[in-house]
Image (cartoon, rainbow over all chains, first blue to last red; front, side, top):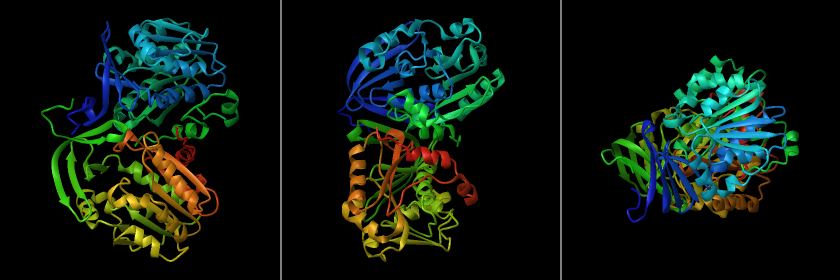
Length: 278
Length: 278
């Protein structure tokens, strides 16, 4: 039982019969936008907590795991990522990691709900510290339409940093979007998509991989990593490449990048690429 | 909020301001022993759940992660583990993994509370399937005293598969026990101890590592891995070696072992050895 004399926020994962809770001190924001409901809480031990439609998006304390593992494996498995598109990612933590790569010349973030970014600027300012980088473009628009209309073969890496596959993000898990990503990517380009829990969502992961295979991608890998604030605490990103293989980063390249991490490193990268789906 | 019309078991991690819950269908057992209180529940989606003094020990669904990662990295970093001692481990899942190694000639499990094993035999029979292996000895005794009195330099690998560092397991996190383990190990021997969450329990991990260093161990490594049923879903094992380094398993040796795993493999081993404490 949760202590009755304290306030707690609980996310129930109905399909898995489990739940995760945080002790909260203050309800900092509650906004209903055209797309969803966004809440921000101050917690006792995890910093700030963002919740969309009742599902936890991130906490101050543990988001580094997700943002590092969605970004660095994909960019380091591309020989020279210059043009990057982020679909979703409104908290800007993925954008910050992408812009840490000096190879990147332009990064476009296409978040459907501007209010996610505005609340992140206020409550997760450390994630937004590169939003004014001249290489960054922040669009508030429909990611499905953006990818459909981008110039063919013009993007090196597409990162799908979405909410769960219900609500506004549902189309991002469909075959049409993945096929449009394939067309948008240059040869050797990489698509990476957050793909839920390796323990709890194996059918979803199989669907993501199937969409990628049917779209014509040549290499498909699901990388596991810890992510405490999501159901089961074990999460995944599924990558696919338009021609070529997906290899872990060479340690010399990682050192030369100058990128500082708290979780990702070359051996962790190789280990994540070797994730077995249990 | 947890659904009011369902039964849920919740473990609150007070020091971290977080909690994890499971939907339960039946309370299968409730026993108070000389050492602790043990509960077994049938859950809706995680199989059976064992709880000791209110802390989750394991579920049917996800214990493979913990048991594989406590056992295989330690045994595969030893050139020829023949004599293994498990302190705690009453659910017998670690014993089962150890006995999968054909190099092992004898494995002694020293669990203080026989009732843990009796309940595991009933509710987690798959973990107990090697309990009658002629190489196995199951003692129900005090692990602290066992290690103090074992013949010096007689053990290749000691696995400390304990509950949290309060109650009966408190002494297993003290410097005296670790020094006794050092004396019990043969040259090149390896001690591995479950060491809580890399995200939530950094002070405890520092203490475990400090005890190992002070006891005279030469190589100390903390390996991270996902473990959904424990607080934060990210857990660790800390290893130390009595002389020599700790290296990941050679892929050929792993293949030759014939051991089947759902999480552990050579690249995952190397990645876990590269865990940074955030």
